[in-house]
Image (cartoon, rainbow, N blue to C red; front, side):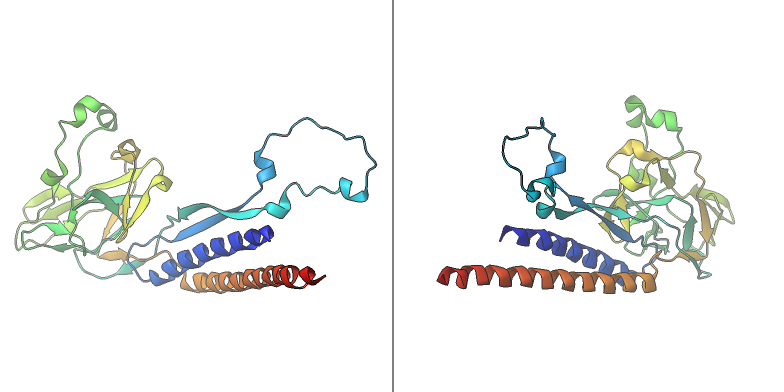
Length: 280
């Protein structure tokens, strides 16, 4: 029976939801992690087509002619989108001078083997070369001191320092202090400023794993008038509420099982239609 695809589409959608919630729960204690959420929609083929002219046939009407389903019997559940919830996570005090937590919408700019990426994960350390790196070894970058207008001019972009030239380095045996605006100071003075950027549309960011994000459009990056503050000696915890996610996970599992019962019922009806009715 073709109607079996209706509950099957719902089951596939619920499976995606279970996987998303399970990933959120698994990262409930991951520093800087932002949870994901799926949005579903009902897809009706009849509503995606233009309504034609009304053609009333010349015939004797029955009651069934006055009850139109608008294609609802062929409806299906579709995943409308996967969204990252960028709510602020709680601050965890660590008293480690190399730990930072960002308060606001900003992200720390880092250099990875595949290019520049952005993260909220602030458990930093120093490499053997004296470079400031994340726990994954990605190199933290110095702020790019330019105006937002110059970033929109393609001719001036080529004159900016390359990311490799902006790697943040700390002198050996230096005790550092990080101000709220990201400036890094030692006993000899300011040695640089952490590159904290914001985005015109943070929902355009895409996850890449390891708490890294990438923006598909460079013009989405805001480097001026940053309102995000850098808090030294803290880490930002995950914004996942484990209790709420576990509750959602249980409901998703139950919904999945209910749809499975509907599929079994369709399968049973189909079997009877093929075996029993054929005997007459």
